[in-house]
Amino acid sequence: MYDEGPSQEDRERFGGDEQGAYCPQCGAETWDDAEFCPACGDQIGGRTSSKPPVDRELQQRWIILVCVLVLLGFLWLIF
Ligand SMILES: [Zn+2]
Image (cartoon, rainbow, N blue to C red; front, top):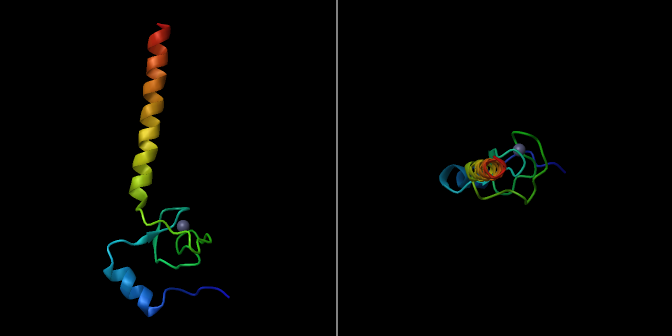
């Protein structure tokens, strides 16, 4: 059985609640108990993230920044 979409209760909760759920795959905003992501169609039943995707992007930027700094430090040691 496929989840055809959010129920009325889900819509109210989705619309009124600031803390939405997000697809762990693509970061699209969705509802808490969504079985499939409305954006990428990935099966996300029960695996939604409560953190907005912005946090993940910020974390990735930090990783890149650290990598660049390590690389610069490595180059500085050589020359
Ligand atoms: Zn998705």
